[in-house]
Image (cartoon, rainbow, N blue to C red; front, side):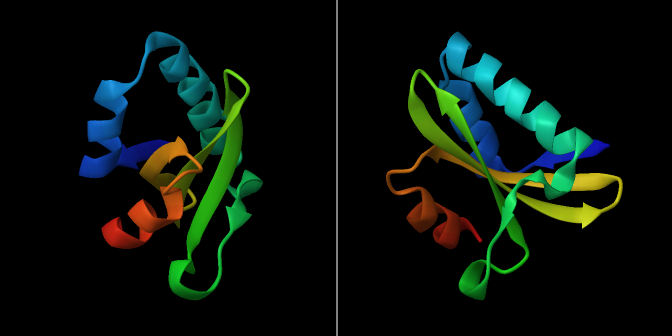
Amino acid sequence: MVVNFGSNFSRTLKKLHPNQKKALDKAVASVATTPEIGEPKVGDLAGIYIYKFKVNKVEWLLAYRIVSKKQINLLVVGPHENFYRDLKNNN
């Protein structure tokens, strides 16, 4: 599975602490093995999937888009606060 990520995702990735990166790596591995694991969105965010995971007892969200059977694009990652606002601005 080819995993690509956008500029907003890479900016956020640089700011993460090691324990946050470790949790994110596990989440990305889960999404890469079974892309349909996330919750599909409707309306403005149609075609985007959201995968939820925990980092230090805080729920984080990972937004991604399935491009093909062998490729996914990671869009945004972060805690729930302002997550959907940032996702709509970058989408």
